[in-house]
Length: 185
Image (cartoon, rainbow, N blue to C red; front, side):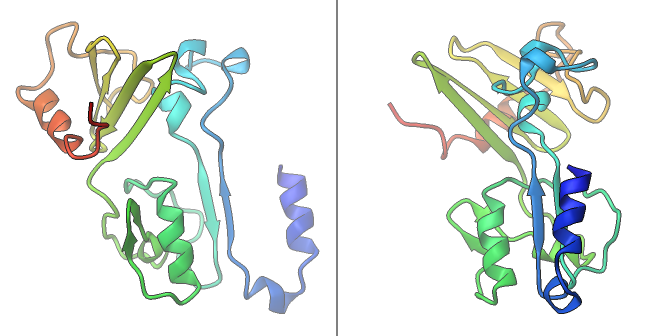
């Protein structure tokens, strides 16, 4: 990947490079067949665990004042729509479930969203997850709940609900975030 991206950048003259925004984003995690520790096959691509939904995104734009920094703000792939529109000069900061993160590239620390939501449905099994950046709740199709504290457990090994150590009200708080976006029966 480094070689091919390097070839792409080397093929651009300076004027083109100064007028080009490059966005690279991963594709829903690593396939289970090649998942490596600390991720397990069950928590890789196709799952709602971090190994399946937390992917790298790199943005390079001449307008950015940030270089080589890691951002911790919550961003979703849908946010690319409003962000690209903003780069193109369209005056839109939010559309449907897309919020521009262009200001983050200028070093302004303004949260793009207060939570991230993902869902999956296969064989009539519906599951969802919501994260506020600190905690992440997963609800399975049978109603089972898993809660993880991502700051201290980024690989989701310490499930808090099962061992009875979920912070009081945290599960209900995260469930309330998704009430308006869950599919209706």
